[in-house]
Image (cartoon, rainbow, N blue to C red; front, side, top):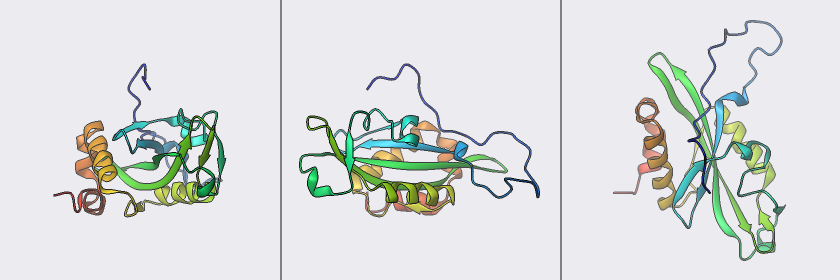
Amino acid sequence: MEQKKKLAFNIIKNEPEVHGSFGAGVLSLANVSPVIIDIEAGEAFIDMGAMHARSAVEKGIKFTPHREEVPNGKPYWLVWVTVDHKEDGPYYAGVTACEMTVDREARRGYKSLPEHVNRMDKSLKRHIIVEHMDERSKRVLATFLQNHNIEMWNRSSEELKQKLLENNG
């Protein structure tokens, strides 16, 4: 899937904070980006279409919440990556993964919509949930985040680095 330009993570806009007015304390989707990991190919890429279940992987697929209905599905991870700011700059604040399978030939796929929505919410709330990912995919994600912006990776929590790099020695 060739991209004409390199997609970047959404980084918090330089807007004044809202104090006490409507919308105060509301989490903004402007700070979250979906990263899709093709497990078999060992590749990761940003696809903003996933924000509305319209990524290149999801287009033309009818999804079911029943894994057994898609026995030949190709496995993917949809990873919600939230970026936040510290004094010294942006960092990967929330990273949560959800599974998804797609059978292009049958135009069917498996995903749990409630899980995808809840994991996006957890990412926005700065949680790191990647323990259920296979080790190779964790390495792919860690490498992708580092290559995308090493300074953001360096400013990220030790928890994120440990969870993505543990058992990868």
